[in-house]
Image (cartoon, rainbow, N blue to C red; front, side, top):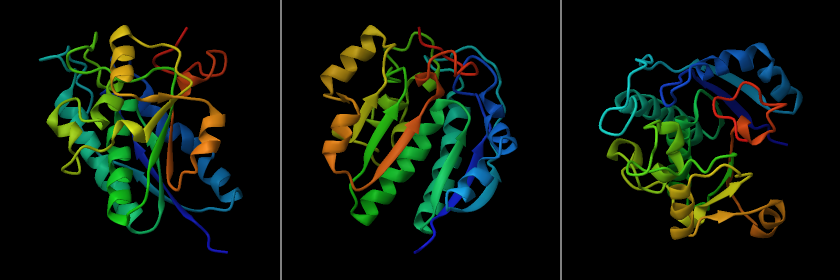
Length: 231
């Protein structure tokens, strides 16, 4: 039986949020023994270390976005690293970092699947829809916009990392959502994005799945470190 090589890629940044702390995630996961846990599950593990990127200027939003240049730089780095490992036949496990980084990692998976002729379905495990647009965002925080950006609604530097829009609305499903802005709800409905349970997943028969897990999906009792708790 062929052993899958899993690569650990750290992206220690919180530039997409207004609350500090998620930049400590990659090293915290290493200290907690993520490499050992993955090896015990049968993976060959390669730790790529942490990606380099700009620091957090802790600035106020400008032109509707907080830290747009920094978020773009981090996502370009994530995209390049994830795509390189996918092309090498490895399975990259991206360790963030705030949720804006999903733009780069999922764009890489989408590009790889396009080239390989594979189907991709993104299961977005999150208490939030993360579907704010430049016109609807109440905070300018880009960690609240990755779903919209992946569907082509957002700054050009984030919506076309592969030269084209990463996903079609039918390629993403929201799971566990319970804290959604009114404008996000309208966006989800207008684009026909599915919000569904595990029974639906079992019925899809997907050939390629990337699971994007946000700790705020868990009840606050178990996910005390999340930046954006949902009531």
